[in-house]
Image (cartoon, rainbow, N blue to C red; front, side, top):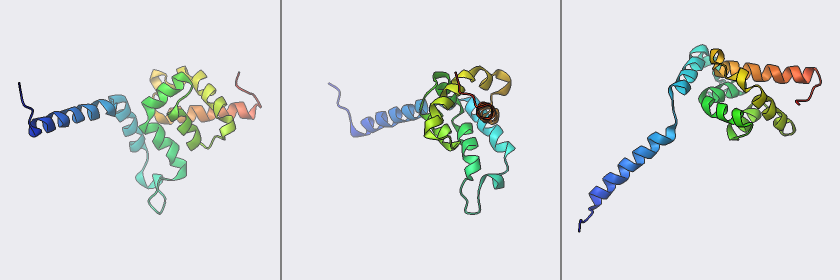
Length: 141
């Protein structure tokens, strides 16, 4: 019978922890590229207010850049915590968020077309489509 030492057990736990952390990160090249494009197109001074906090106008942009792949999955499903968080950051009233989620899902092919896979274009298209519907007094079908 083999006796497990405390040192051996700790080594196994450390390796298991590292494995879990690495697998849980879910960071891919697309996420890194999206975030890099976002940060390179925005000067640091434009993102922060005088107190060093992220400006309200920049929060949705930063969130979309960091959570781009998770947003893609939520938009494909038409629901999810990342999509709900984006709606909140865009200051969409709670009563209009279901419509926003449906609009997002309906626009999925355009939002994630290969030639426009950036957080910037995602937000621009979502906002413009929502404004078009509101300007025309239309509801999403």
